[in-house]
Length: 441
Image (cartoon, rainbow, N blue to C red; front, side, top):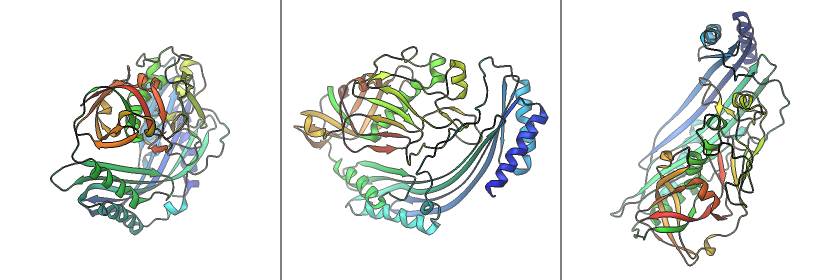
């Protein structure tokens, strides 16, 4: 379906919402195509294309919000009717202010790549094969699972307050999980995501295989307070599960965050800044607007260690009497917007940190970050692919390691950051060196 048809559908849906008695209405339309190719035991197991389309309708009647969705063209007016009917039976919400209003949208570059859009199914299989070849270049390693995927997407947001914003995007993902095949067992994984075809898929497979190979025959280490270097994979897991919930304005307003009423307080190292940037060039969370039509922006959450802002969607911003930070995100067309990050960036002066550490450990990945206490920030995780650091050099692999602590104490005890920042989904961060972590061997 041509984009102009989407505008026609959205326009008719808004008129139907007015006819059915809505004071405000929002139409969110998305469509996309994805192609994926899967790996199983060093072989390409399957490859397939998938198409998607859907419409979400949010209607407001006297301060009460109703929602309905469909993926069938013929059901659109019925879906609008259902959204309005839902709003009419909901209690009025005194905290509701209004849907976003028409705004100026600055250009955000690097979101769509024609080379990605033009990839054939055969091209995707070849990219997958490159990952397998990278794994096979290291002796004694088997790719147990993995995948290549590419996607193209389009969405349109239109509401009764004049918002009209559309966008198309692309994404490419490579992932591989490997295991050693000898008597000594070790596993590892690697992945990359990009808007463009700039991923070295052979190198991705080889990195995972090399890490698994280097992790066999691990030694035991004594527990205690230690310096720990977190690879971006490991730290991103902790940030997502232990830190991000605390800056969500909805959690703050409901008292489910340890950062309530702490704007202006020091919560991290004086050299550390954390910002959310929906305008980052080529960012996986970048866009012209958030998923309810508020222009994307850069929001400093932590500036030189000081908490400066929470993240808001339109509802939580209206409730707090502030402007939305452009952080209304949707899981899909079938869900309402909620507060979420776009591209969360950790910024710290970079250096070659390993030579500066006399004794410590480096951790590549963790298991169990999802069990972190999202209110207090406490966590306890199992470290994977961890190595000893001795006299400024990475040494022996570690057999078993648990690390526990508090995310805010970790951020306050940052001593340095590596030079190679990495995009881990929607989080952009370098390797981070933190002191005084509780380590159990």
